[in-house]
Length: 443
Image 1: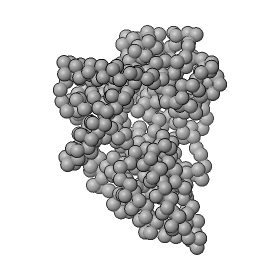
Image 2: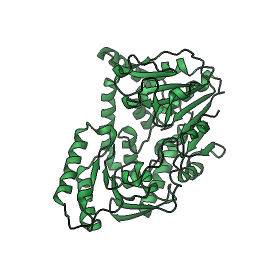
Image 3: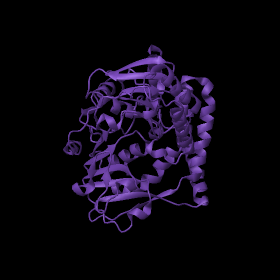
Image 4: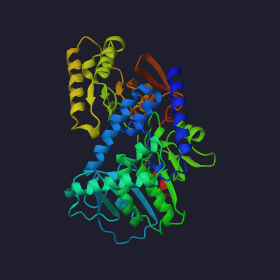
């Protein structure tokens, strides 16, 4: 494990230096070194670990350029009786969050109808038709609008002109400037300019360090002459938060729901005087452990099907020899139900389960297997589940004591780990009731 910790520290310092060197670069908000999102930032993290992985930069950069030819414009749907809101939330949603007369925010567990004093700007990843004939007050939906090919080429041409005439020239800035995340940020600017106006006193974000979020903060600060208070809620517990390092237009006030995160952000990420607050999670509430054990959880991204299948087989033969493996249920990631490679992997895991069914073996203990990068590991640990973790890239995926003081981890073989907690209710603090949101929205 010391090798993993050392690698995590070295990589983290490398990313911090890049952020610091580019702190006053006006395109600093483009930088998105996310350890679980398969984009150009991920490829750079792999490259910094091993120069032989340069091919990944080329692979993901080509993927980003293709995405720029596909990205559409965005429009708004919804009418406001009052546009002079003093509080605003910028969040995400889909079909499942829509009711007859309110939007249900899953990050804050709130109905918009119960907070008429807040403007909810919702980036909607769902069917536009479901919003028709809905009377949802104080909500503006940001929806993708089909754009013709000529407009897309024109947009990409302007990106090239702007970069080579105005932008700082270095490898990282070049790669991130021609990324989907930067294009998405640019596409939303006019909407933010319209609704994040001079009256705003509080801007609240389920904060993920995405480029569009930094641009929203920048626009709100400019519109209010820097009077607005920006709060960012770190709603998840990623193992390696390289995407959350401090840079220009960071939220003024961070809310975290983990003692481990609180201590790490204070020590490694935030300036000494920066405001950070430890509150129970607005997103997560305690659920019975039965909802999380006897499962195999697939991640949103993975790259080595063969490694995953090999490690599941190893777990079965070497570490779960007294368990009835047939009791396991494969759980696909909610965002990947239609992903061909996820369906293929799920079918192959189910075949392993089927071939190893043994009624003589005892029932499973309260354990589950997690694959790749996922914050659900911490949630499972907090409700008492014994966790096994298959890590494709240990540096980017493992919960080590470099960041997670309260997590005990043992490497049982290469790419395979077992976790437990030193103390409960420390690494993730569940909400006891939804009234905690009142603390979040204080300005």
